[in-house]
Length: 285
Length: 321
Image (cartoon, rainbow over all chains, first blue to last red; front, side, top):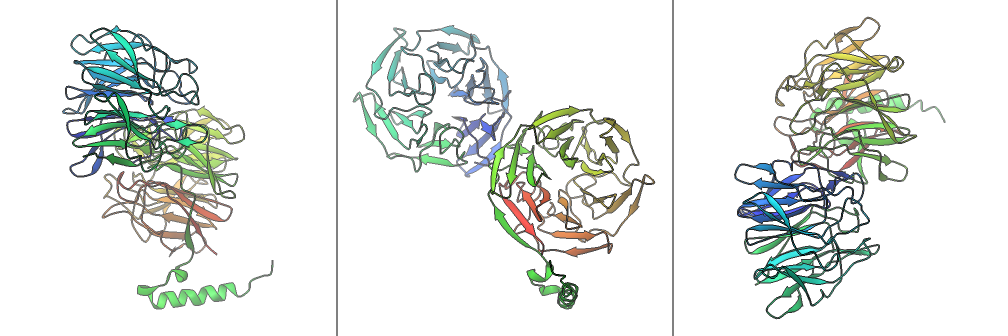
């Protein structure tokens, strides 16, 4: 990547990887840069409508949706209720209807043509939320759904076989981490618990790749970051251990592009320690 | 310290050796050496660099085209960087200078490339790690040259909010907290090197319009009669260069386009009214700044290639014997 960015969000759309928001030297900016795997090159794209870090993002119908985020100028400050839509064809942003309240480090997934925003941290840095809202692009409106069984943020989220998987995260401070796995069934609007993630952690990246829900990295202050790469297989109802990352990291996110999983930027040490410009790629037969 | 009576003799001999073989002058004959220090904690382009209280401050700049209020300080004694109070707003291509132990940040663009120049003026007090907002210039400009003489902060040339270079010359009086207009540059330009010494301001190089339209012009401002006069031109025409006063020399380093970035390190000696070539930087760069503290000259961040390509976190230090 052409810059070292911490607490970014990552999404793939139209065959390209987008890295958005984040912080540099303690300043949260509207950074937006795009990676093209066909020529292994980066280029800047239209900045995010406002400066945010810890944004949640997902691709749906050829567009990227950005949900929430902190304003920066400190750790986990003033979670926002903002929602933005990015159109890669015109390189433009649209401001969408906001969530009912501000939050950040929220889990964001797309399911049945709608965007789910799950958990997160409220504008009060000490309070994690269990809130679960869903955005309908057809009506540009939000609706509230069954909350998480336990409030948390800095978790990983993904969708497989019509269900949402929500793993790990933290209940409060960064040391208060969990391996919880919650599964949401949209038909019944209910959560059930699944087998816990083998390595409890928060600040991790998550994505669905080749039929498994992969969770990568995370932080465990004060000692370090997690290189762990674990995957939940819904068919076996069990976790598998995959090849760990070359080095532990957090504050990055993962997205699938073509036949591979990409992670970009983040920090190799807890907090804003050793912010990286690395882009790493994982492939599995 | 013992008087080194032999130094001028050696220098003369070296100069003769160099003059006799200009095509193959070894680095030692050109003077000075370069080394690396602890990198800046981020790769940032179009920063401002100033030295105050034996420390190096790096202000503003852009990352991925976003101008940020970045501010870090380097302590040469510990070879460490630490975060300082951010600028009141995100800006790149700031002009900066030091007066009475305080840093003055003048103008700047809000983002790449050369977008929406601001008239913003800020004062930084390192003792309290705080910024103060001062009266603005009469209009927005950036890549403006800033130098201090006689208790006044001079802001010279630059590029306005419409992207045009300007000849404007304003001075901020620290005693009255107000701006006053002075004799403009003879030719409008920006991305120039601006350095004060011996009560005069030197404006060297820069560009008249697009990056390739560079110059080697050297203008000197005399506050006694509010007038500009021409001085010997810089040997290598360039813009986007870094400059500072170091060991009584006006040292101008780097720059861009065309065809790439410049590694040139040239010095104007106001006493002899002549230029000399110093040891070039290990690699060309622009979008950086220079400052001298504790007998060493520092270059921080910027880009190794034109525009925003090859943005670097390198910290170079140059020393002359």
